[in-house]
Image (cartoon, rainbow, N blue to C red; front, side, top):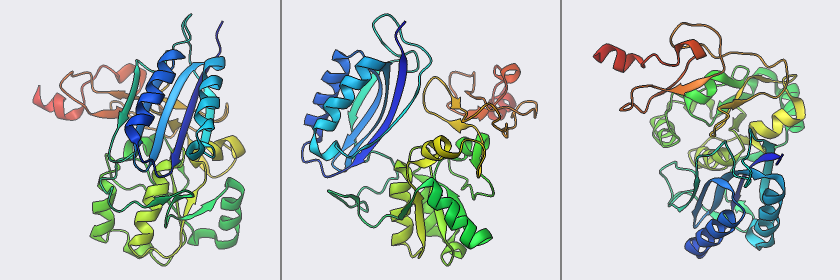
Length: 298
């Protein structure tokens, strides 16, 4: 049986011809029967792909042969399944697009990149360096979640600040409102799934006067690989594919609360009403229950 694998990757680098990169990646992935999503802009590339292990390895060799992507952080994880042609069951199709931003904060003109990556971002912390910082500075350290609030409901760093945002586009307005100005004198550690959102978020915070900003290098994924569920992380990691979420060990805490019945769960699901785009934390028994907005309208 083919071995299913998923890769999560990004690279910030000036790309003079994003459309040419799009065509290259589309044709390469189609030839290898890979599925997933790739976004490309003048600032770099961001994506996740799934398929048979040999095919993913061939993709990676070609990807890294292009100089701006040679140092890209590529994270591997187990997929659910692939078919006889190696197509991933975790993604419905392949999507390769050019956008103004590879992660949508709605502030493309604020982002500056060079050959080394994002200019003006937070200082990078490896998982071990993060533990050193917490050991040295204790409760002074602030964990700042760079994901949307739904993702944080099923897993987050202990004691983290979780902004009430539905999309990354909401962060700029919150920062500009002064809602977190009280953190400007403290060490702030931004974190997100694989690190890409915090590359941008930490640069936006630094530009707005946050004086000691860090980003967790490799994001929650790298932290989970290093410490599993025996560190500062609680719960499951939300992922944007058919798996829904992943755990780092067999003793992961279940911190999500079902919106329907209040039981503990790490599942998320879309509202069953086809006109609704709302997603919620919901257990298997309540997955067919419409979200509150549609239940009230019924």
